[in-house]
Amino acid sequence: MRLKNKIGFGIFLLVFTILFSHVVYSLGVAPARNTIDFEPNFEGEYEIKIYNSGAKDIKTLIYVEGRMQDSIELDQSELIFSSDDEYKIVGYTVRLPSKIDVPGNHIINIVIREVPIGSDTGGAVIGSSVAVVHQVVIKVPYPGKYAVADLKIVETNRYDKVDFIVSVNNLGSERIDAAKGLIDIYDSHNQKVASLETILDSIDSKKVKGLSATWDDNVELGKYSAKLILTYDGKVAEDQREFYVGKLFVDIINIVVEGFRLGEIAKFVILVENQWPEPISGVYTEFIFSKLGEEVAIVKSASETIDALFTGELIAYWDTEGVEEGIYDTVINLYYDDQKIEKDMKTYVGLDSIKFDLFGTGAVITDTGGLDKLNLAIIAVIALILANIGWFIYFKKFKK
Image 1: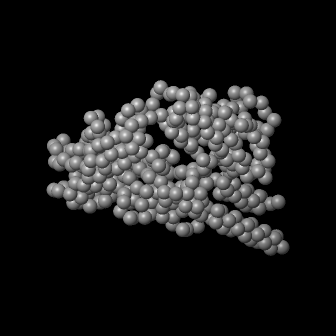
Image 2: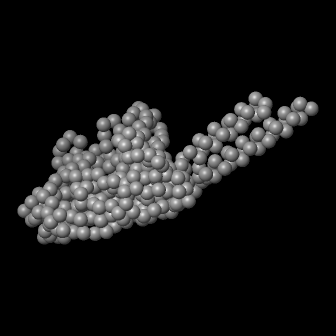
Image 3: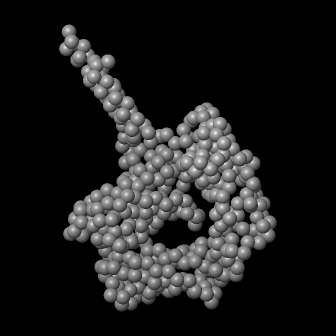
């Protein structure tokens, strides 16, 4: 083979490898998390699916980690996959004691780790191999009445109205009969400019309820802070948030997801506008996805510098292996210049699309519907094959 043909073939192999490397994953587990409300002497049986995503011959070790690891009994400690095995099911039994003294969430990890077939279970193998984790979360209620308050700002880009939601999570063992939020709003000079009250409401044990309030009187552009005092049955919980009325110095104007398939890695392209007349460095975003009050994933973008009065791109990746279709409550945090802007939205995850309903405005940002990576890869491969054929004909004719 002539040197030029060798070079062409080498380029073909290199591009082919790069374009298709993103589809090679060896392990997956679903569901990613199982949440159990504590009950004395509780016993339950559950199953997880372990996926052979790489479609190859592998061996996996399965073991339990965490302070309460003795509460979980696995029905298998290792699995052997052939390349034809799409997934295998592993069962486990949860047995809880009569009492857990420390309230809150107790996390137990079921680790599925790939090891070479025929290897022993030495620490060197375990320490260097790839693993996925299924989390078992035991929710232990606080004795009596205990609430956690989360103040959310529903920003709508309106200059005459700001909506607040006080999310109250009753983590106690007893029902809260009367909960009410008082929100004091301060301007950038720390002067109080408004006070708001939510309605009075009850919250059942282990439930979450939102209490709303609206600020629509003498709202001016600028930066504000809101301080919440939640009173409930003689107890108090607090929270606070900073927010802007009007345009921000840095703002998210679009989120694009291209070529998405559920179970694969989703690439987020976040378009960020710098409205400040100077470059701003250290700009990045953080997505926090939750469902039914439980955190599912945290996704962060790389940090970038956005030029003055310019729209730049931030890139983030979400591995959706084990993620289910449905609607997720999402908090997106935008960080820049030692500041943090928090926005709430809904995320709609489908089989082949991810859509965001930003900040309750109905501004749906969707899959672009363009060519995905696989189609681009196929086109590139075909183009390279045609180029090699053209080189072959050209050099053969030139030799004659």
